[in-house]
View 1 (tube, rainbow, N blue to C red):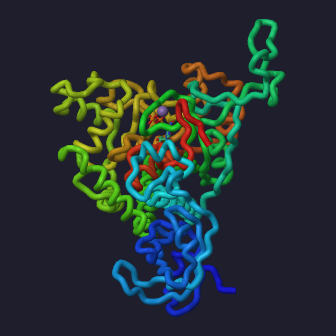
View 2 (view 1 turned 90 degrees about the vertical axis):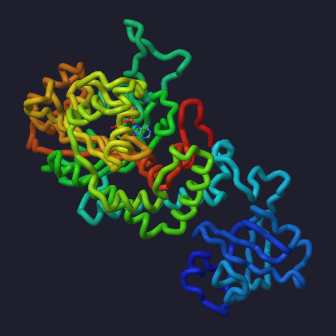
View 3 (view 1 turned 45 degrees about the vertical axis):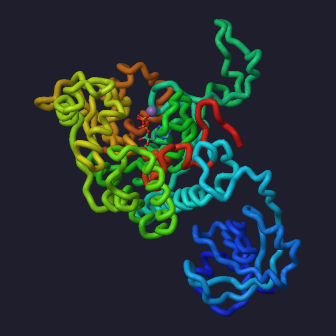
Length: 483
Ligand code: ATP
Ligand code: MN
């Protein structure tokens, strides 16, 4: 039996003049002779030269774009240009025909919108195959980054009874009959009769549970799906997305920023080193896409230049208060060009403001820190009052990326029991429900910090895609949960 080799293996080792067998899908077939075969192991196709004089014409007729086949023959140095080796086939077997009249994909450029509607088939395009190979490599790089630094990968629950942010927007999990749920005497739905004997939902973040782990294991991270029922029809939001959440005992805000920045640099560098072929495909795609934009909206850097720029340059770090000053005095604000004018200290930044800071003012990734307590979550550490800062702030940090906006949100956590409880009361977060969380502050509490990195926003940045729905295989967003 001749061994089956993957196309990537063949191109890596080039075992010339050996008999090999490859299996894959037809990408192109011209002159009844030159067949481009791809098996997903690499973006590069293998040229298979079909011996059309000695191959059954019924077989030749079935070699169509998209068909699954097996080819066997001798690997030789390529006669044509464009590839170093080619397979001189002596045997072709068809596994699965692909009727070009019915197959929705065509061997030509198709719009991303069209492909989103055919998401079950879009892996078969060069663009999406590259996106999903890159997504895999980035996930691997994240695990490697943490593994090399002694972190423990903690699997936090998908079904929880808590809401980490203290705000709604959760998907409920229940087995109660929807049409006629049991009711309490006062008429509310009686969740004590539900599966978990309480009301539960899909997690919006694994952070609170990760903090529990960090209080013994020291350095932990989660990497799992999170769910938000927010009705955000943007190119940056999904209802189901993956989040990486490290949590580190004894880290302060500075350590937290260093960890996040090092991690982002590491995984982007990893992609540059290990995914050159796929990045090339995506870089070319982006150049094509930008051709349809007016000159001033095109980026002045190519995709890989942009990635290298992030790896080689330190992120800018400044406080929210400093950022507000810059924004207030910015040209677009003075000329009334912002949709939301920057009024002053205390308001949340809109994505147009974040993008101005990153893309126009600093032209670099930015880490904003020490946000007003009012606009951040209850668990963030309260800062000492500071001169020139109008109100109370917390040790929060958001990392803003060009073209993306917020990619990371994190903070040093409030480790002081009294201050934490006071804040929970102020924000009307019931203490009883989070008694398990408060125990960390009652027994051996310590300074600690962590953050959440939205995985799809990272993949979006590295692949240069423009819509978050194109970097997750089966996107969930308002009105759509197909496949
Ligand atoms: P945004 O303001 O962009 O909605 P957020 O402040 O709600 O973000 P966090 O709750 O801090 O975000 O979540 C941490 C990270 O998770 C964000 O920095 C972002 O990368 C990612 N993220 C948040 N919401 C979504 C979403 N709906 N879809 C995809 N990624 C998300
Ligand atoms: Mn949000």
